[in-house]
Image (cartoon, rainbow, N blue to C red; front, side, top):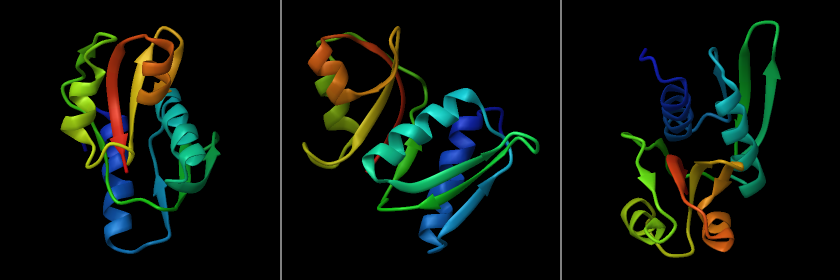
Length: 126
C-alpha cells in the first residue's frame, strides 16, 4: 500500500468494478477522498458511500463506472490549458470527468472552464 490514499482508494474501486463486485470497503479515508466521492456520486459513477468515522473506513456501492484513476504527478493547470488534459485523460469530449483542486475547493473540469479558473489535477473517471 502506498502513501497516496486517493490513488489507493480509486484503484480498489476500479479493481472491484472489474471483478464485478457491487460494494467495496476502503479502510483508510481522508477529507479529500470524501469530496471526490461526493463528486462521483453526483455524476452517477458510484451509487452511494457510507463513512464509518469510528473505524475510519468507507463502504462504496459502485454505479456506472468504466475507469477511475488518480492523476500522477498532480499537474498544475492554468485556466486556458484544461482542454489539453481533457483530450489526454478522457475518451471522448462529452464523456467523463476530471476533478481539479482549486481555491474554491474540488470542482469538475466543466465547472472550471465555466468559472474560468485553473487548479491542480487530482483524478478522473468515466
